[in-house]
Structure formats: C-alpha cells, structure tokens
Length: 378
Image (cartoon, helix red, strand yellow):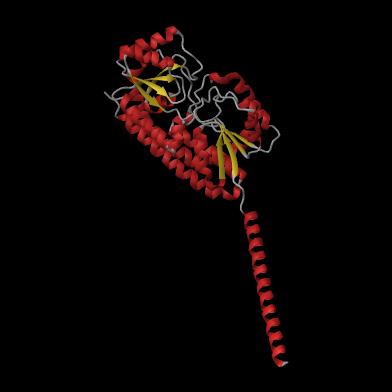
C-alpha cells in the first residue's frame, strides 16, 4: 500500500513539475512576443520618397540612409523631357511622404502631379529652389568663335574666387535659406502652375540641368535634407551627418572637374542636346548643342549644316552622344565630318547597364570626366 501511495505521489509531483515548466515556457514566449511587438511599434517605417530625376533619387538615398525608401518615377532608360506619369504612378506618389522634383521648367509633368497632390498629406519640394540658375543661350551655335578666345581666362581667374566664396555661402548662409524653404513651399503652388505651363518641355530661358554642376548639386542635396528634417525632426543629426558627407564628396568631385579643365587643350564639345551649360559656366567647357535644351527641339537643316561647318572649321574630332537621347541627327553630323563618337551621361535617367553595374552619381560623373579628357585634349 505504501508503495502504491509513494508511486502515486511521485506521479503527481512529476505532473506538477511538468505543468509548471510548461507554464513558465508559455509566459516566456508571451513576454518575447510582447517585447517584439513593442520594438516593432518603436521602429518607424521609412519615409517614402518619389523623385523625377536620377540625381535627386541618389541624393535622397544618400542623405536619408536607412530611414527612407526612394523611387524615381521616370523609368530606367526613359527621357525625362518627354515622360508622362501614369495614373497609377500618381496614386503611388499621393501615398508617399515626399515628392521631389527638379523644377526650373525641367519636368513638363510636374504641375499635373502637384494638382493630384493638392490636399494630400505629401510634402512637395522643388529641389532647384534658391539655386543660382544660368540663362540658356539660344544662339549657342553662334558667337563661340568671338567668345572663346577670352573665355578661358575668365574661368580660370574666377573659379578660385568662386570656390572660396562657396564654402562661406554653405557654412553661413544656408541655415537662413533652409528656414525660408517652408514658406517657399507654401507659396510655390500658384507660382509653379504658371511656371510649368510657360515652359512645358521646352524649358524656357533658364537651364535646368543643375545637377551636372557638383557645386550647385550641393544645394539640391541640402534642399532634400531640409525636407527630411521637417518630416522627421528627431533624426536631424542623422540626416545632417549624411548630407555633410555628401557635400564633401561633391566638392571633391568639383576639384576633379576643375583639374581636368585646367589641363584641357581644347574648349568646345559638340553634344546631341544642349544640356551642359553649367560646365561652361563653371569650367569653361563650351558646348554646341545639335538640339536645344530639350531633345524635342529638333534643329533645322540650316542649323545642322552650321554645326557641321563649325566642327570642320574648328577641327573637332568627336561628337558626343547621350545614353537616353535619340542618335539619328547626331549620327548624321558625325558622318558628315568624319568624327568619332563619345558617350556622355546626362544622369537624367539610368540605363539597364548602369543598374546592373550599380553605378551612382559619382561613378557616372567620373566617367564623364574621362570622356571629356579624351575630347578636350589633342
């Protein structure tokens, strides 16, 4: 009898211990699940950003880091000059946190997207706001012969002063400029409707290709930084550190461009469209565009002939093609003068090959420096 009772007691104790162990394990599992839920609640979702131009996409990624997801609405290989967003893309942008467009008349579709976003909880910024724009010379095929002789001296002497002044502008002047951007955003809507309608795809009188100037590109990146800080002020230090690293890289790239320019023996390039005026403004690299600011502005037969004559008179041996611009007219010019082809990247949009090679703004711009070294040296 004692053996039976002892056996029964052992069984009951074992069962009790088992149930206690199960209960403890269950409690621990519940605690882990609760902790996981709390962590998930604490981790913020990344800000969803839509852009219209590859450099804006790249800068937003570099400044935003892990706290952003960035999508460029212009597809790989497309031409932003002629692109029109789909209805689905507009809906997607309306679900985002930030819409960044270049402005300065570059995107003919910007006003239609802004209309869709009116009343939505999406911040909209014109990246070129507050940036010093250059005027577009409609007579870019003419006047270079008179202009070129004195031009290089102007650039050589002016660049050093400009560079010393630029650091001061960024260090001291941008803080005030950044605080003014928010007011700028609220007032832009009316202004932009008139601005875009007036420019459409033809750009108008100012050159929007700002991103090709590394120094002005700092301003584009800073405008993005300010927008991110406004959306997520608790991450100001993070965004600022990322921006400052990007700024250093851009100013280093500017020095590389300047070194290439200082060593050039020729001054002029013939390009498929006149998108490189900022290289003339900062580095004294003159452009003759076969087409105008937009590739849509096809030249007349007379303008093509003038370009051919200009190239022959100047002994220009290269015609510059671009990764997303039709080549037919530029190819005609190349054949007529017996020139070789070189390829510049305007960075408006990536190609499939660029994506496969994991190119970014800096690798593409350094490739452009190599191309220019070939074109501008005897």
